[in-house]
Every structure is written in C-alpha cells, then in structure tokens.
Length: 409
Image (cartoon, rainbow, N blue to C red; front, side, top):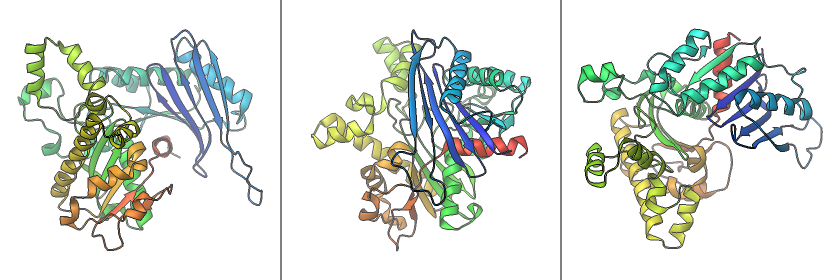
C-alpha cells in the first residue's frame, strides 16, 4: 500500500493530491471549483521529477485547466477522473490504495484518523452543528469520493484531533457547566493537522525526539492559530469552540469581548446573522485596513496608510501576547516555529513578533530571517536560547501519513 489520494472538500470546491508514499512524492494535484454555479473550473497539475542521471527539464510540472458545468460534487469527482485519464498519471497504473479526507470538526468523539463507515458518516453529520460551514462540505466530498473509489478504505483526518490532548483547564470555558455540557460548548482547537506536522518536522530537523521538546507553533495564513506543544502533545491552542477565537486573521476578528456584541445588537441593531457575518467576514485585517491579504497590508504600511499600519500593529500585538502566555504555560520553550502563507513568507511579521522575547533569550538573526530561502530553516542566532524556525507546512502529506496509519499499512 503506497498510493494515497488526499481530498480537502469545501462547499463549492475541493482540492486533491495523489501521493506515492513510498517516496512521499506528489504525483498529481488539482482543484475543482465553482461547483453548483453556471460554469465550473478544473485545474489539474501533473508533477514529475527527473530520474536519476537524467538532466532536469526546464518545466517538471504541467498544468491543465478547463471550464465545464459541475452541478455537484459527484460531477466534480467525475471531472477529476477525466483529467487523470486525459493527462495522467494513469489511475490504472497508480490506483489509490486509500483515500484520506480532511474533516474540520471531530468534536470530542474523534481523536485519531478514522476509517469512514456509515456510522462515522452519521457522526460527522451530527457534528454539523459545531461546524455548519465545514462538516457538510467535508461529508459531501466523502460521499462523492466513496462513489468514485468504492473498493478502497476512506479515512477521515480531523482538524480537531491533535487538540484532544488539551487538559480540562485549557478546554473549559468558565460558563454554566450544565449548559456547556448540554450544548457541547468547549474549546476544540483547529489547524491540528498542520500543528502536528510542523512540530514533528521541527523535532526531526533538529535531531531531537519530539517527546523531549517544548514548542510553540504559529500557523499564520488567512486563518491563523498558535499552539503550545509539550512533548508532542497539544496543551494549549488559540482557536476555541470555532476557528474564530484567538489571533487576528484575514477576515476574522479573533478575540473580542462578548459584551461588544451585546452592544452592537442593542445599539446598532445587528442580529445574530449580521454579527456572525461581521466577525467572520468583515473583521480582522480586512476590517482594520480594507485588505484581507497580509501582502496588501504590508504594501499599505509602506505607503504610510494609517489603517494598514494599525492592522499590522494589532496583528503583531496579538502574536506577542500569545507567545508570552504560552511561554508561561510551558515554563519556557525549546523551539518556536512559523508556518503557512504568512508565517513562511513574511519576515517582517516574524521579526516583529519575536522582538520583545529577548527576556527569555530569543534572538532572531536578521540575515537568516530575511533570506529568500525555501524549506525548513533556522532564523535565530547561534547563541539564541530558543531555536526559531520557519517550517513549511504540508497538511496533505500529514493526512496521507495518517490515512496509511488508519488503513493498517
């Protein structure tokens, strides 16, 4: 068993990767989007590496795009299969041995990769109440993929699973205990697949067992979270009942005093749906600067725009606040890692976030931090008491690894 298809399904799109796990190499990847709209779009990329002794060609990857009606996820998977047939690699020669699915919310029921049975599907559907924007879309992808690949095991890998090790004092909200239990109100945490991958990759890179390290991982993309990892176990994380809590994000507010929402309801007339839209889609970087992309915010800072400057400052302030809190929770850290789109590509953010941590011996090397290198790398000085890393995340590879684990490979 070595070929795994990884599927990340949304409500109107899904991404996929076909991986050869004997080398952990990507054979193909793609995106099917605009499902249910008048015209859908498919993008399929075939990945190729030069054989040993073969001169590397200028272009190793070939990408094919097309538009066609895609009324539902079933049609989307049919279009994906057509692209494999037309452009390769051949699924007859590389049939998937298993299919791994990203599922956002596993509640308190799922704490490891799980073979998808009808009962598991029912549980994912029942957990829609905790993730109404994500779990229904994840389930739609599962059902379509099982129809396309009926003879192989399908495995659910849950974003929340890595955080099932949170202790009760970290996941409990201080509200009426009976009411919280009745409605399953607690902190679940998200981005767990990425936090697990990065913390293990950091340990391997540094040549230390993950069980011996205290780590802080900043996953900074359009969605952002930070996790304290002690001995390979998540012990604190910034996202909570939903992915809204915690750090400032592209369009999400992060931490807000709940009483501010009462005020907006009473004085501005915003109902629950309007407040939901405000905090999830019109807040964060976008709410402060008008830009949801950090690259645009940074360009605004360079132009001297007050809103962009404030957005940058608030974003960094929250990073520092969580870094300090997690240093206290862990009793110090051996490693601090940055990952995802902003974490991997914004040296200004990394430098600013770490600039006040000299009291615990953190020293960022400016040249290392600003170097345009790719791949995992150290950006702290040789004398820094805490090693600061940039670690490119690979959630698809982590899902594939966990899929093989659950499938018994």
